[in-house]
Image 1 (cartoon, rainbow, N blue to C red):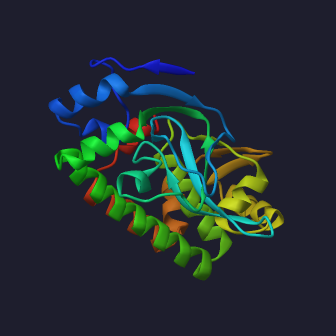
Image 2: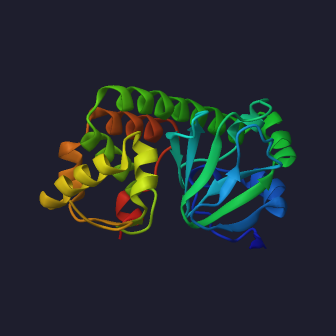
Length: 246
């Protein structure tokens, strides 16, 4: 579903909300609202995008798939960022896939339009470059976390990152998908989620997770979550949690 944006439409995306008045005037005629259902593949490995995506209520996972079919998440993007940053940085084909992990809305912009605006060297260029640094931090920290930290802490990190980017405290996700996100086996995810549930931090049942005690999750998570959150907040800014999770 596509719907053109009007100049007065609010855009719940940190990057788009930072646009100057002139940038809005140039970009808004090309922007479209789009609905991305859960599981929608935005692009696959080796594909070249014609448009970039700015999530507003959806959450997108960037995944690497190995030759044997196993997958692992390298980054998670919600209303804090964009999908397709490589296109404005001069990259060609993208060597990973992007999948709508949590269904919802986003804003799409033709790649050529955003590339032209980026080349102007205005506020948008500076914002996207800072976001790229924050994204590199998230990718690097995810690799370190998956290598060094227990699955239970990795699950806490992933839940908090999702919680920051959704409206409400409920996350719809299958065990298999969560396992792919945190680089573990489905059975191990079940055990780890059960421990968090026994501790009263979440309620978990067949593809449905509800955050019950965010502060409790923050006490259990490894340092990776705070490093990623603080760097994003420093470079780009993040929506207030009280607004995200009413």
